[in-house]
Length: 384
Image (cartoon, rainbow, N blue to C red; front, side, top):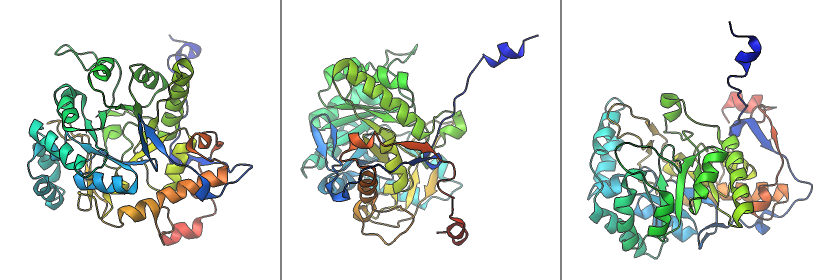
């Protein structure tokens, strides 16, 4: 019979925290928001704000990449999505938007069984480069060896290699897996890799020579990996742990590799908390899917539908409620924080006395499970 002491040692759990459970403590010094610097860097590329449009078919197409570029930001085009699987992706996107709730999952599974085509990869990259915009593209690990050289030859600037969970070491009987250190030698673009949520996985990824890490497993509004697989770590804790890995790697090598908190955002306060937790940038999906410029026509869906027996994404209706410029910069008359995200970040940095993103990393945070509801009974009753 096991003793109580022996049983308690089997597995120790620690508490982890999401956006709604923490708060940022204002600083002892304040700065005018317009004097804050919110630049973000990947490799040799600099962007004037650190909010990235996600590489999801409902969020980013060629037009979104170009429009984000004109505003000084970055949108990532998924070349494992409909943009590189179909000659006319707008027709496919229209079908997804028109499908009923009962038929949409089967439709998505069918749509994503079509293979990505090398000629379309090249066409999409060239369409972006012709406008002068920075071209960031994403691929899943299984297609990276085949399609990354095609995208690079066409002129792509940044490569993101993404899957639900990505590690530096992958074990498989069927093929020699993607080796990131080798990929960094072969592909001269900055390579961003994700997704991970732990200190050890993040540090090991950085040691392969990549240029950035995406943080987050399953927090997205249209992702169901947490429900289906039970995987994930709430985003504040995941960001803190990966930021510690980034800082350790910087101590080891002198190289600073940015981390990008990917998914789970609803409002400006969430964005601000991610930076206080250590993020260098954030990647948003459903927020951008609500804009008039998004290709999803008011819908947003997860990108894990290709599995024929276990879909791990769902289509949700987010509506078309704002524009790209209002989402990022306002002006806004809304009181719930879903617009003017860059303005919210600058304001929070000003209240924390943070002149730049790295100084925002030093802002104090507290565990605050009542931060959203404290004193807000009238707002909650009125649905504000």
